[in-house]
Image (tube, rainbow, N blue to C red):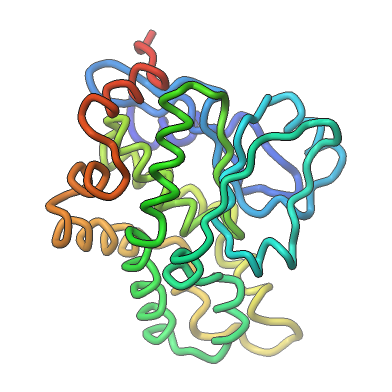
Length: 262
């Protein structure tokens, strides 16, 4: 199965008010395995969900919401969730607030940035992700290894912070880099140029020059992976040293989340 087909297979579930939502189930891992469906979901912000979206979420039995937004973001746009359903909440406070800036806020604060200024900002932001989200990854691995139930990971747009954390989990599961990148790039379909421009711009004037630099770009994922390679001798080293994922725990994670290909 090709990486493009792998990524496309994760689009069977949709939320009307949060288009950048998907089940990562079906992505192919190493040695003839794939990620089980209905175990790991990724999404954008959950503050605008309608009743039909809440009905979808009610049926997913989510046990943990991992909200990668800052405390300020969560206060301004609290999650909506089905009544009577109370998943655990994991947040990324503290260092994450400094190392993983709110992209929506950045768009508003830097509307006149040139493409290169916006690109430099995004590259710097991505270089902060490994430190910012190490503790969050450790807690996620604990939850997943202990098989406490399905997880939904999200931030504001569901493309940058969520993209990084999901890329690390997929790597730990033995998913190939091209498949990880294909899933990462899917977010440009649902939170791409038009939605980013709408945050930056209103009225009939020209779209700001920095819009495209705030989109999902493969070079940003490549930059953070290169940073991890330099500082931690690869993703495996980073996950073991910073996120507590030793080889035995990685094997446990895979046994929980992977199944043989049909």
